[in-house]
Amino acid sequence: MEKSLALVTTDSFSRYIAEINRIPLLTQEEEIELAQRYKKDHELDTAHRLVTANLRFVVKIAGEYRGYRMRMMDLIQEGNMGLMRAVKKFDPDRGYRLISYAVWWIRAYIQDYIIRSWSLVKVGTTQLQKKLFFKLGKVRGFLEGDELDKAEINALADGSEDDVKVREFCQRLNSRDFSLDRSITDSDTTYLDLLADDSDGQEKLLLARETEDNRRLMIDQALKQLTPREQEVIAGRFFAGVAKTLQDVGDELGITRERVRQLESNALKKLHKILGADVEVLVAT
Image 1 (spheres, rainbow, N blue to C red):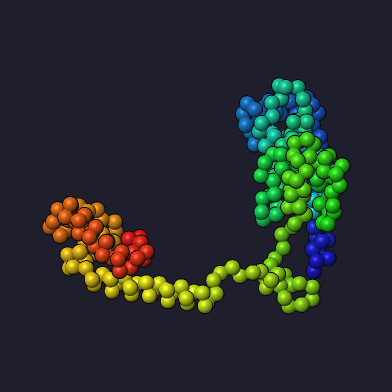
Image 2 (cartoon, rainbow, N blue to C red; image 1 turned 180 degrees about the horizontal axis):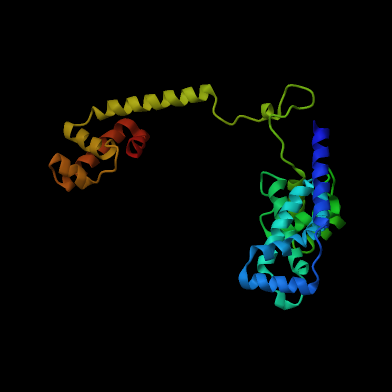
């Protein structure tokens, strides 16, 4: 199955190359005329002719990135997107050929695609890291297990990054994504089986639940030691489900704000004597 798929991919690529090679190149005069017409009228047919006449150059540029383990047709497709972008931005009055300008857009689109596809985790988040990514690709080809010597690190750093940062970035690039469900050697053990479980065990969860239940029971018993009016104030202030002010509770009970404050202060003092530090749990509830 894999062999037949490879043949289909190869045949598709060969047919594509044959088709674009049959498209005639444009002379500089023809290119300028078409570019000026597109700049003026934005006709899609004109843009199509400019794009198709330069598709073979995209293939050549995409070939420079074969070493990044990407499908050639995917690289070409991204490069074609860059070419179309270049056609929209091209100014024929500057005197240079379209491809001389487009090459920068083509490379930018291809490089962005490689960066996006290289890992589930972003490997190049800054322009400096992207530059280092492609410099490293040219020097080492991302061969896993390769150690960079001092001279290579200095060449990659180019005076803009220190050795430690370069090594860290190289390690990130060499650490490719893989499934945690993948088996280790020939056993049934997977990488997921070896991951440490940092969650609390059943015994710890049960102990925490019992501790919380005991604390709640103590609070309930302590509340019964208050006067009925103090219980009403505490219930209104801390067990109403919403934050209530002293004035809100006073309006509900038909007493003044200051009286609510006095009752709350007295109640909390009583609770502190009974509960100690656990009274903070009540206040924070």
